[in-house]
Image (tube, rainbow, N blue to C red):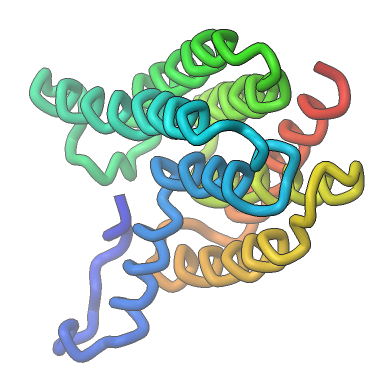
Length: 217
């Protein structure tokens, strides 16, 4: 999903910038961002850090299952069925089914989290993530949007709102998310995956969806 434009460098192995851009793109891949977010909320100084260890392990397991394992397996199945040209899903039409399935998995994750009644805010986050997938799907019907930056925009919005609400000391993670968003945007531009408008639209879309979900759901 990261090799978006052909590398015209005759010595690609000697291009540290391209390698670094690939590294950032994989590190901040949409499959991994929900796990990072959950680890921050559960294991830093937030209201969620008071959960028992068993509850924390359960929450992490649920997030990994529905936001990483099942989406990754769905790509394997879709590729085997000939529904994807490749795993990079660079073509707009290849993104329709993965995005629809992603939204479904996030909603199933939110339903599973009902087993922890006090985790209502975490359920909101998963519903917001499903909203981000649906937004990207609708936009993708006509235009290409950055899925990477949509995820990061949602994370920046979440940490900003929780910091303002006093849910926890999230200024450090917020700063990391902002810097990470900048690095990711630069990486996607360098790799030729998106133009600036697609990146901006993704970040702003994710930020808006998460903000509306946290404030009004």
